[in-house]
Length: 425
RNA sequence: GGAGAGUUGGCAGAGUGGUCGAAUGCGCUGGUUUCGAAAACCAGUGGCUGUAACAGGUCCGAGGGUUCGAAUCCCUCACUCUCCGCCA
Image 1 (cartoon, rainbow, N blue to C red):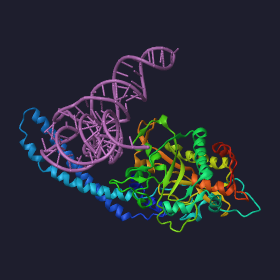
Image 2: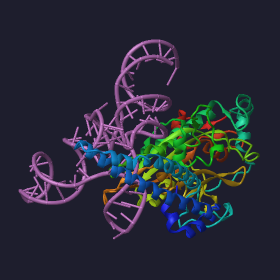
Image 3: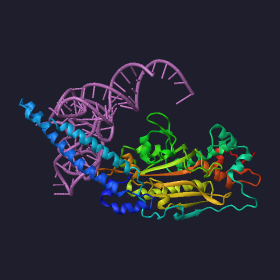
Image 4: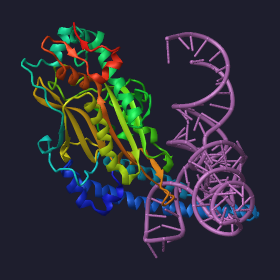
């Protein structure tokens, strides 16, 4: 959520900025709500102050055994009046809250302006693309002919956008996750966390998936409902929710390996082949909670951590800065890391690292005690994939394939595969 | 699923209708002392909102109710803990 003060102080600027995020802010609606809120709040508080004062007098008078009849008479109707105003006020407040909670974050000044991916900017490339004298096959082709990737079975068990991996390919998938976790824990100083995969509404509100993206989530029929997490960012980031953390705990770096669940509503017909876009996939997720003045450094560091994984796997990739219109709801700035897929001769997203500044922290009430002021201030939170396991598997399969359809196992994964060097039929 | 006990400030923990935003301890900040530190002693120290600054408002798990007045009484719900049952 954005700071409500921004709306009061620099409304025009803000509206202009939000346009670049593809968000048309209804100024008139906002202002009429805000004006009503203000006058109602003033009236209500004035009445409350009056009642508090007289009630206190009654207390004092009673303790002195004085007659309180006149005082009682004075406040007799106040209670009902206050009750009425309060209920109207709280209606207006929740309307206002509803408006504010659906507004995306402001972009950082370094983010390129643009409405779609055309305006994204490539920051760097890494690695060299392999040249071979046979035709690259895609991961579906490779996996199915190895007999270790079964979409038919998955659709029988569950439906479309699922996959069943078996044998050494399932092992390779697991090895990737283990390798990523170990690297972040041992080399990058993360604390491993094992989190619930089902979370409540409040938790999803905190990171910004609710109320706006309800239709993207899998939801249980309980009342109140639980939701399958779309990413471990949700439970990880919310671990600082409603807390005031000490300065000594910062920066916090958390990592979790989880399954992620997405409805993929509205993406019909997109990436229907293979493991690129699934209802369920695994991801190693990185979350930082940091002091506000350190969050942009942290974004570079976190992106570097994700890149390290691809470098150790020796997978060619590039890093791009998303433009204002292509960023997610909560982000101020996002780097996407895209891995090279030789079968498609293009880069595909394998990680997304974002600084949300205080946007999520405000929704979650996540604060730290600033030693300079002694006061609680909002934290900055960041999240990034470090990296998507299923897509990393695709990257490995396609980049490490051999002419005979076997797949060489990357050096760094071999310790996780009992020294196996090659995956074959 | 059954029975019971809880939920109060950064933390621990008092408070059962009125000068209670809340004792006390810890923590934190400042001071005294010290070569310096520790200890001791003294003082200060909740969040949110609001104001130029005061004032004011609000918050004792959440929501409702009773009352002139609720942390305190009543109702509903959530969560935590203990025991029993069931279970990976």
